[in-house]
Length: 183
Image (cartoon, rainbow, N blue to C red; front, side, top):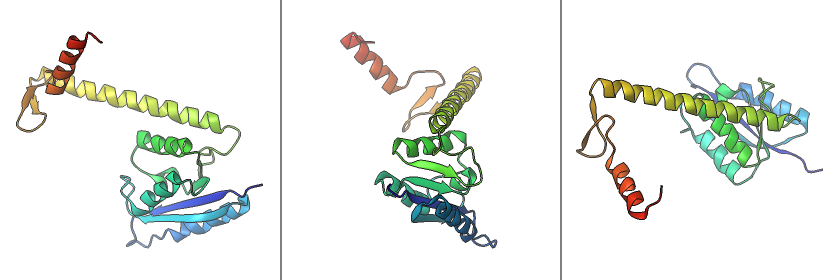
């Protein structure tokens, strides 16, 4: 049987408050060993997880896209990212789409390795879809408020549009549809 190649990801927010990713790494290594996994990569960051612009996080994605490991083990979701529900779920879905399993060490239900892995991924996808809908609803509500206030804003260089008016791109697309007769 092929040994599972694992990568571990550890993150602390800063290195100036006595935080050290080694605290997480030691337990992640031990857990991987108990599972019989071969740890082939250790990725660490000492930065905020407010976005994905972290060296260790980016290196992890490069290795994932090259299929250099089979499972990603991380301490907890908030160590992986703090970009919000949608971004978090998109990251997990991206791992799944790459054929890479994932497991949270401290959150037993965040685990795509077990018999319920398809259910977990399905639930995560449904939650992500709901977050997209809520984001769209919030955007529409904000635009409606601006429109009611008669506000204008710029779209593109030196062009002002009244809220609710179509952009040049939208007008062009409409003209193309009219010319070709397609919807």
